[in-house]
Length: 69
Image (cartoon, rainbow, N blue to C red; front, side, top):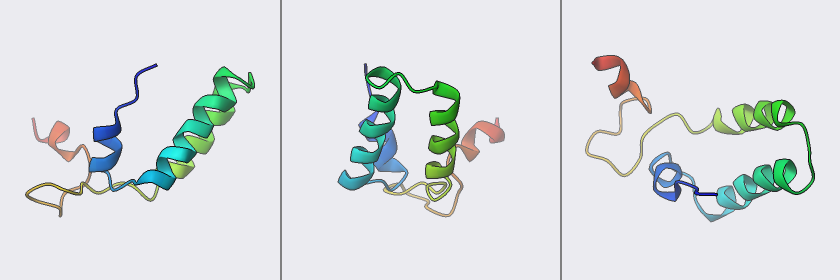
């Protein structure tokens, strides 16, 4: 499994959030929990991480550049 640590950092997440992400992965891979249910929890978790950090322009929403094309 490859996790994009750079991307979550860019969204403003830190070590404690990486622990939560690891828990999401564990719930599906190790515990066998329904991926749909975990996906709902991930969507809720991500609500607070919608702005780009550590970039030249921090006023844009994350992934807004996709819409600009």
